[in-house]
Length: 480
Picture (cartoon, rainbow, N blue to C red):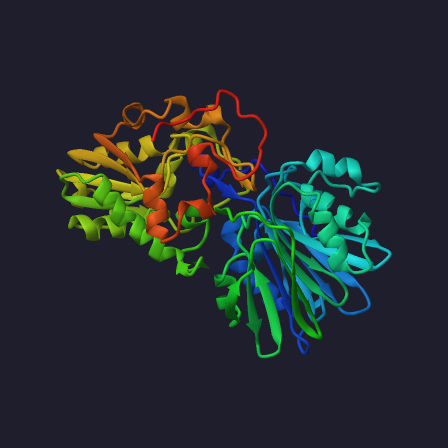
């Protein structure tokens, strides 16, 4: 495995970190085509999944004789060059872009991981988080040089019983507790697996006539001209080989797709549960306007996460929507350490206001969530400094009261403002400095998606998870 020798500081300034937003662990993709070297298409598909992780990227390919892999720290565009792609020939390839949740951000924890066993070489790309990772590591004889739970899953597969890769994967998966969408690469196969609850997304499509693709979200397919066929079902094992495709299943109980995929994580153009995410967010805004109406002159979206809900709120309320919070599109991760003055500016570096359109107005500011409550007060202050007469906060999700255990980097309970304020919306309103504050209800979120709340994991909102999780100190239970 090759890697570039380019310094990378995991503590470099990121406005995503400044905002205290949830961050998803990974985006994954796998492509097969009998007549193409597919690493280049994997590279472009990873571009469409960059939002799911910005700290490292990697591609592994199979050219029948052996697996080749290249991975490094940084964005997809920083990691891969033309010569890198050309060094990864083969009709099968997988790719990964990562945010470090389990395991620190270093090259040893970047994916794909490779190992071998009596059946040959195998690579893994993983989105999710295993909550019994300690017990999994105790079961494996030869752990890889990594602190990532994904590496432990790969070794568990390699050391499990089975005469085929599918048997090994099924036996290993039966020992995992948590969330996992996985794509495995062998010398002559792609194998996609989704955990029995289907917590993280995974979809399947056809590619350029005779090929197939697996990916975290459907825009990855759109980017390379592939055709979306369906979502991989919870508990499904999809095998792709030169002979075609086949499916098997793990034991399943109930579905529990992460509801926050619709609220924030997934791209608006992603197709989940029979609906585009943008449609669901638009509807969330409409229901938010019904649940929390207010007399105002202007609706403002916090870009980009509040955009679709703000459009919905405006349409249902009849209040004009204007993009008076302007985002600097060139702000992102930097390799230059900021001084304290820049850290204090934070959101002001990212957003600017159009004061003449705000001055004297009663403003409704719409965002998808409040996590730690560090950024929202700054946005409220920006609007007041621009002359807003009133600022009313509207949030297109319920209060976040509990951490996520299933592959999302989220604050601990004690850091969550809704937990700190014991679920009191009025106290949160006072903390952010707004004249009023309204959250979308959990039932309202499910209604907007058009599916029963029973098919979702909503533990971060309710404290109720689809499986046993580690103890949460001072667990907060909100009355409903």
